[in-house]
Length: 304
Ligand code: MG
Image 1 (cartoon, rainbow, N blue to C red):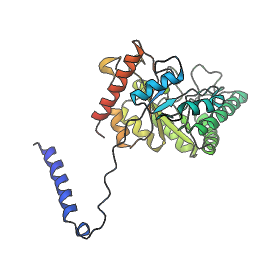
Image 2 (image 1 turned 90 degrees about the horizontal axis):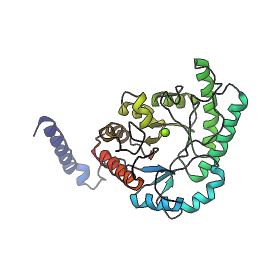
Image 3 (image 1 turned 180 degrees about the vertical axis):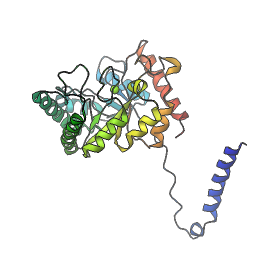
Image 4 (image 1 turned 60 degrees about the vertical axis):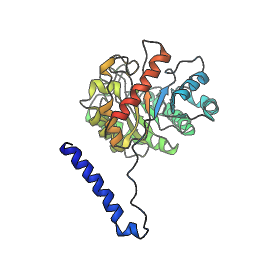
């Protein structure tokens, strides 16, 4: 037994002895509350992940694999609420989050384009609330979206005001706006989880949240653990993909290690979903199944 093992074992034994010998215990008082259970890994798929010609076939495949969440796109979501509700009825799969689907963008120079974003987000948020989604994923500006407001402190302050407004709309519908940091090739404006979390904090709205995407984090973060932890109470969603080519976890071999990030999620008692957002180069039914098994194995290995 090395020193660490010895300390752990004596600490555990010591605690057991203290409970057994406690006068309170002897006189029938309730035992101390059990330590919080380690959070479970709740996996979710975007609609393109599972094989199948129809949503029903995809949901059957997901249910067989024990997948608990579905992340639909936000485009036209309002018209899909009743259909999605019916198809999920009686299944052990819930809507995890809604992936974007809005038009316009929040950091547009043109006020009309910003209004388009707020209006379309409002419609998606209402549908997301009806579906019980954790939130609707939002990117303030992709690199391709122009003309864009300059990347200055004044623009950041303006963004915080816009996020407050959107967050309040989300809260009204019992859901959230989930800020997603992307890698610099897609959106240099918001790249790190800590930055997204600080925007949520400053927006001062219960309807603002953030997420981390392992794919983007590979390029932008120096620590998976540090990145997720920096999300703090605002972290409501996670995306996963392989780490070199954005295909199924495991298809990039040894590079596909998620344990450090999973350690943080466990330490934080994260109760949201880890949702697949990726392609594949192999047989979909096989690569998806292998990816799910890999993530479950790594989750079990991760020590908070
Ligand atoms: Mg993503």
